Image (cartoon, rainbow, N blue to C red):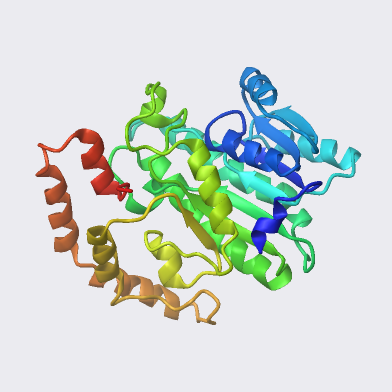
Amino acid sequence: MSVSVFSTGKNALITGAASGVGLAVAKLCASHGMNLHLVDNNSSSLAEARNGITTTKGTLETHQMDVASLSDWSSLKSTLEKSNTKLDFLHLNAGIGAKGDWTDSSYFHKIFDVNFFGVVNGINTFVPHFQDNSSDAKAIVVTGSKQGISNPLGNPAYNASKSALKTITEHLSFDLTKSSPSTSVHLLVPGWTFTGLTGGGSTKMKPDGAWSAEQVADFLYKKMGDSEIHRSCLHFVISIMSSPVTSVMSSPVPPIMSSLIKALFKAARPSPLHTPQTPQHYPHQILQHHQTLQHHQLLQHRQTWHQMPTLPHSRKARLWYGWVQ
């Protein structure tokens, strides 16, 4: 089982590790005696994180770097190679939540440089550590977002970057399944979680109903330990496409949302990724998929969302995004 990667002496590298989910996962790894390499762009926060993690059996090293910089990744690789360190657990978690408008090109580039290419750079750099592996338990975790699935209005670049992460994680999982059966790939899609990004960074107290980062880390560990591949009903694209990627969710989707998702995609369910398809066949399915979407159902759902002014905002948002626990 992929949970056995959390073992004494195993080597873990986590980006965005100075706070939030990254820090919580780092503490989880430390509790299992793993050797930690914590990556973040904030040196002072890294120092605080280091002081807040108790290591009894494993080692702990911090690396201040920009995940959007290929040269920084190259330097990190050289550092690990000098100590003959080969990774067993890679959590590509770093992300930002900046906002901008349609005239702001730098907004789109900044979001994608960190949220998307920060992950791609990490995969490019360290995927050799996970390839051709048929014996040792290893795992790669990519932190996505429900906004990459539900696509709420207001932050197109962030939503698009998280949607892109879902796609590359599926493909990475498929490719490693063939060459490295002992390497598992997981897309972590947290529910409403209180981190430094909550409320655009302005929310200082955990809202009622939100999960803590520690709860998400515990849920990740539990689901990675399931004897069978866990596919969440909310992460419907992965489930319906029968990708081998494991999707880990921190909260269940409400029945009304689940029913809507199934209705929208049932008629145009694409073939599994591992089924050979001609270049002409797959685009036709995608076109058919869009043509068969019942837009009036989506419209009706959005209207229902706007017709709930009497509900507290947090409850209203949790209904919309499927965050009811």
